[in-house]
Amino acid sequence: MNGIVFVYSVIDRKSFLEAKALLELAQNEDPKDIPKVLLGTKIDLDAGKEGEEGARVVGYDEAQDFAEKNGMVYFEISLKTRENIEKPFELLAKKSLEKIERLEEMEESIKLRKQKERDEVNRSCGYCGT
Image (cartoon, rainbow, N blue to C red; front, side, top):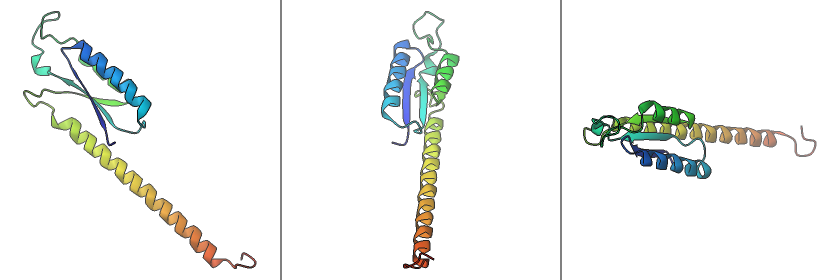
């Protein structure tokens, strides 16, 4: 798995609570080094006043704090206006590539170490070990 995206609506607290619950499940199942992104959607609908239909019920700061505490990056997006749509996925792709590069470097280091060990064994005398 290269990344996880948690999505909720800024005008629906229940969806935010569900994203929190899904994060808890994911943390129990997946390694900690998997990049995670929290997306708050429907920012284009945040036109109402507090308490009215269509009003934001999950504030930016609340979501940002939650994301930071859980090692995620937070973005607010609008599918309707396409605001910030590409940024989260570009970030996940970048982090995935960095992880692949680290794994390849580790693999190469292991190969070099094993080759060095084989070379040392081949150079030593089979009878006295020198």
